Amino acid sequence: MHTSSRFAGRRSLAAATAAAALALTLTACGSSDDSSSMPGMDHGSKASASSSPSASHAMTDMPGMDHMATGNGLSDTSDGYRLTSEKASLPSGKQAAYRFAVTGPDSKPVTAFALDQTKRMHFYAIRSDLTGFQHIHPTMATDGTWNADLAALAPGSWRVFASFAPDAGPGQGKDFVLSRTVTVPGNAAKSPLPAPATAARVDGYTVTVKGEPMAGMAHPLTVSIAKDGKPVKDLQPYLDTYAHLTAFHEGDAAFAHLHPTTKVTGDHGGPDLAFHAELPTSGNWRLFLQFKTAGTLHTAALTLHVG
Image 1 (cartoon, rainbow, N blue to C red):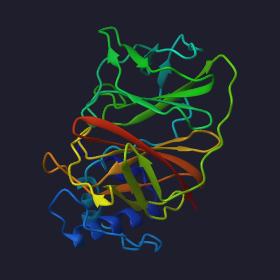
Image 2 (image 1 turned 45 degrees about the vertical axis):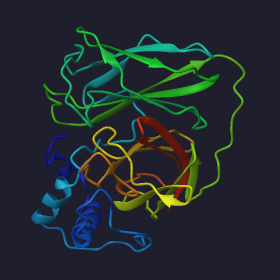
Image 3 (image 1 turned 180 degrees about the horizontal axis):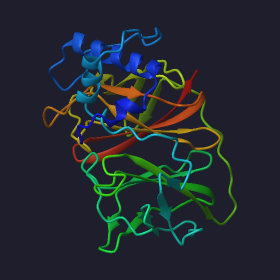
Image 4 (image 1 turned 120 degrees about the vertical axis):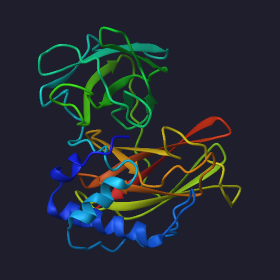
């Protein structure tokens, strides 16, 4: 993770105010182990605190808070950087390779990328009905061409996202999320979005989300993980955290990465994990939580309503 303060200059006073209150809340909790010590958190109340240089410093000290991409990821260009690919469609029902590149303001492929949560590129695929979620880490050739090996895709319209930070050039130190759409031919049966819920089950685990985020404001979320009714305390580090949380907005598939604020302090974590949520638009968001136990990666999905 980078420890820059570039994110502070991009926040409105309201967002900085709420995030400062979050930082103070985390400090007051005084948790020093793998878990957040904020059970329940009573997120329905709005945080309020005065903005100060010390508060801004506290925000950038929390894990993940220094990597906050602006925008919703629904464009293939930003500040002269462009996501390019010759692929406009991918085959149905079988593994497929999606090749792409990121070009800079000089129109040349970018080859220098900074590490973000242990990876230089995070690549996501989601169907228009918010099913079929994939999060993979592609490989880059020396010429700047990336290769993302996707699992079998169902027919329909898909959006693919590239999340990265250039390590050189005018965009150095800034996070970008760019996307393009691809079509998978065939009979595309749309699945209705599941109703908002506070819990989901996957592979025998129960994932519970507590918090009431408001659109365009910084709010904390707590994720708790249990198995057979018992709190899980054997979460293994995954991408420099104990769980990775991504969200997509119903209707347009706008992207948001919810950043972890629980520090990794050992080989085992849980059951409670804290996240910084700043979802830009009201409505329903589909959340995908990825966590690892005993070397196996699990992905839980649930719908969260944002007011």
